[in-house]
Structure formats: C-alpha cells, structure tokens
Amino acid sequence: MSTTTAGIILLGTLAAALAAVHRPFGDHLYRVVTGTRHSRVERGIYRLIGVDPHAEQSWGTYARSVLAFSLVSILFLYAFLRLQDRLWLSLGFEAVPDHLAWNTAVSFVTNTNWQAYSGESTMGHLVQMAGLAVQNFASASVGIAIAVALVRGFARSRTDRLGNFFVDLVRITLRVLLPIALLGALVLMVGGVVQNLSGGTDVATVTGGTQTLTGGPVASQEVIKELGTNGGGFYNVNSSHPFENPTTWTNWFELFLILLIPFSLPRVFGRMIGQNRQGYAIVAVMAVLAIASITLTNVFELTGAGTVPQAVGAAMEGKEARFGVSNSASFAAITTLTSTGSVNSFHDSYTALGGMMPMVNMMLGEVAPGGVGAGLYGMLVLAVITVFVAGLMVGRTPEYVGKKVGAREIKFASLYFLTTPLLVLIGTAVAFATGNNATALNVGPHALSEVLYAFTSASNNNGSAFAGITVNTPWWDVALGLCMLLGRFLPIILVLGLAGSLARQNPVPTSAGTLPTHRPLFVGMLTGVTVVLVALTFLPALALGPLAEGL
Image (cartoon, rainbow, N blue to C red; front, side):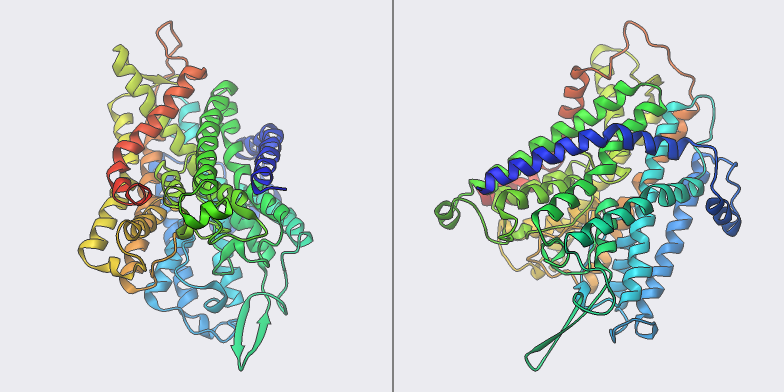
C-alpha cells in the first residue's frame, strides 16, 4: 500500500468516525453542562472547597475564579518541580531549575504543554502523574468551561450570570474527561502502549554500554494529553516513540481523541441557543479549514522540491517509517489545527512550505477545530467579527444568533484577535534584537522559521516545537512562559467580558434584514474572514521565513 493510499484511508475513516459521534457525544456534553443535578461525589467536592453549586457568577467573578484557580495551580506545580529531588518516585532526578520550573508550570496550567526538556531524563514518576497529568485534565476542563460560559452569553438574556466556574470544572472533569481517559487508556494498552511503574519504558540510563529502563504510566498520560489536546508526553520524541504510539491504528486512535471534543462542541452551541443549524454552520467552517490545511500539508510533503525528496517520491526525513509521509503530515496538521502540540515527526525536517503549514494552522488561532473549548470560543469570536464586517457593508446593525454586535462587543472581539499576533511578532522581534536567535541551529530564512514557530506555538498555547533551536535557557524559558501566560488568560478575560455583555442584552427578533448565519453564504464569509485576517497579520513574517525558503 502506498503512503498516499494509507493517508486517504486514515483521513476517510477518521472523518466517518467523527461524523458518527458528533451528535451523540455532543448531546452528552450538552447534558453535562446544562444539567441541574449533582452527584454525591460532586457534592462532596463542593463542600470540600466551599462552593455553593447553586450560586451562579457574573462574568467578572467567573474570570476571577479562573485566574485564582490557575494561579494556585501554577504555584503548586512550580513547588512540585523545585522539590522533585525530595519527593517519592523521583528516580534520583535533581530538582528542576527555577527558570525551567517556571516555564513548565505555566506551560501545563495554560494547556500548552511546551516541553523545553526531555521528559524521560528530567521528571520523576510522581511529578509526571500528580503534577503534569493532573494539569492535563484541569487545563482542558478550564477551556471547555470558558466556551460554555460564552455560549451561555449568547443563550441568555437580561442577566449578568454565566454559571459557576467550579461547578463547570468539576462536572467536565468527572463526567467527560475522566471516563474517556479511562477507556482510552485501556484501548492504547491493548495497542501496545506501556502502562506500569516497574519496567520497560520511561527513563533510560546508559552506563558502560548497557541500557537500564524503568517504567512509567505512559498509556494514561498519553490518552489525556490527546483527549485534552495538551501534547505533553513522557518522551522527548513524543508520539513518534514506539512506547507511546506503537502502530498505525494507535496513531489513528490518538487523532480521533484529539478531534473528538473540539468537533463535538459546536453541537453543544447549537443546542444551548436552540438553533442546531448554527452549530452545523460552525462545524462546517471548522471542517473546511481543516480539510484545506491537511490537504496542503500532504501535497507539500508528498511533492517536496529537492534532490532527495524527488528521488524517493516524498520527503521522508524526520518521519517514522511505520507511519509514512502522509500519515505524518496529517498528524502534524491536525495537532496544530487543534492546540495539542503532540508530534509523530519532526516539523523542522519538513519541506519549507510543508513546515509553514503547522505555523499557519496555529496563526489561524487554532479554530479548525481548535483546542478543547478554545477552538469553539475562538471561532465564535471570529463569527462576531464577520457579522460586524457584513453589517458595515450593508449599513445595518450587525446581529448574531439574536444578539446585537455593538461597540462594546466588537472591542472585546478585536482585542481578542490582536492579542496573540502581538505576542508572536513582538516576541520574535525581541529574540532577534537581543541575539537570542543564536540558539537556532540554522541560519537565514530557516532560522527565522524556527524562532517564529516557537513564539507562535507558545502564544497560541499549542506546545509543539519546530525543533532545531535550543530553548532551555533562562531567556527562552522566561520569554516563552510569559507568552504562554498572556496568550492564555488575556483572551479568556476578553471572551468572558464578551459573554457578560451579550447575556445582558434583550434578544433581537429576526427580521427580513437579518443576515442568515446558518447558510453556506455565511460559512463562506466566516472562512474567508478567518483566512484574510491571518494573512494580513502574518504574511510579512511568513514571507521572510518559510515562503522565502520555499521559493
């Protein structure tokens, strides 16, 4: 079977599986976030943390709850990393240096999971399980909770209440992420992913020519990293490692987990606002952008220019032979279209234009379908911008799903869109201005691509690395940590502000002049606005990097 045929089969079966689960799983998510009954375990947690599950919060209180929870998480994880050498199951590893501990704590709490270290030679089992894996759940739950709060802003009227953050957090973790993680871990173990604490996997110590391997809970962390679109892993080579992703069908299953929640959340949006067609329109935009990106990435890698790629028929450098070119290219596209950051090949070894595509995917804002929660609220912000542009063209006050988009709403949406480009472009410029680009292993356009990719990944909370650049230095750890922090929480505050503004409005009745936002015309408009905004923002930087190299 050719690599192209294998790639087509992977994508076809993946699309069929996602289509099959979109409605039932989306309905399950809807019941989780809208139900009024609390389980005994949930009630116990609420009593433990002092939360009244029946008390809803304004957008300001909801935002403060998110920030407080995340601050405590960062401080706890930072202390965990700094004290690793004194903890049980440390495997003899030293305490993580202060700058790397800061970077790692921020990375996992912001759902980025950028790893400036080799997991198998830096972190002990307790830190991996009780520190990093816990944040794989918590940070993913936060993203879904923010998306649900924004949808409540569209669905509710004449109120300042958006729900209760802690109730959303607990429910999403216990009713969605934990059950799927348990089942997914079992499936991965059947596929050959190792799950133990006593032999066969994680930490390799080479002494006198012999290699001693000690184990770790790889399967459980692998499934939640993919399910929560996190990307962090036990191994430096991530999902290209045979212990973490041993076969082509585990590769398929990981991609299915990555896309499961992001592609199901638009169903929740449609049901909560009482217009399922609006949810289908959003998922259609996500699908169009995803198909275009995956196709282009495959084309650039399968028809790569250069003596060696043309001689062998594709660009195989940096790719696992068991996956081939097409499955590797599709994996790279999907994990950067979402906020996963997991890799099964090295993006730095891609062709110039093939390596550009993962960057473009992140620059889109990771909205096709994006990270868990983050993809939906990012796409809804772009929908608000789109109806505003359409309203300007026809001279009407823009409306979206029964809510007016006025000056206050468009300010929140515009600031949301501008946040990550500013972080990416300013960060890249400062790196070159201060000489910190010298850690890149290449020169010329490819060096710019390596630096630009690092800041794009950090600011968009993706976590994948282009490789070919040394980032475990005090400057890089601090700079990328700040980008991850600001790139996560500034947009969250703006999204919650937008939700609060929408929830206070009176519903606007549909009239003859209302733009139908569930039809193909709007799907095309939203797709076009997304692409044009990104092109206007990032084209100069791309022209100096991957485009220049490719030409």
